[in-house]
Image 1: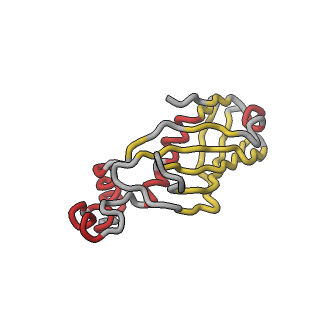
Image 2: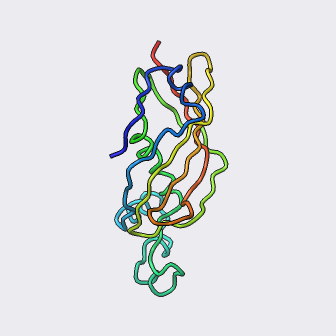
Length: 156
C-alpha cells in the first residue's frame, strides 16, 4: 500500500513544490474493466473488446485498454497518493502535454507516479499543477505522461 501525503491547507500544498508526491499501488487492467469502459463510452473497437480477433490480427496478440480508460483511472490512483483535508471541493481544471507512450495490454498492471510542479494561491484556492506518468509494470515506456491541474477550494 502506498503512503499518502496529507494536506490540510494551502501552505502545506506549497511546501510540496519540486518534490515527488508519491507512487500509487498497481491496479490490473482487466478485460472486464476494458469492456465496461467500452460500454460506458460506446467505443467497442475490436482492438479493445474482441479477444479472439485481437489474438489473430493485433500486433499485441491481445486486446488493449482504451487510452482514455488509462487516463480515467488517474483520480482513483491520485487518491491513493494524496489526502486533502478541510476542503469544500476539488475541481479537475485541465490536462497539458498529455502523451500516450505505449498501450496497456489486457491483464497488465499500471500505477501512478506524481511530482508537484507548482501551486498558485488564487485568493485562497490552491491551483496545483502535477507532472505525472502512468507506469506499466515491467515496461520501460510509460503508458501515459502529462500534467494535471486541479483546483482545491479550502474551507475558510
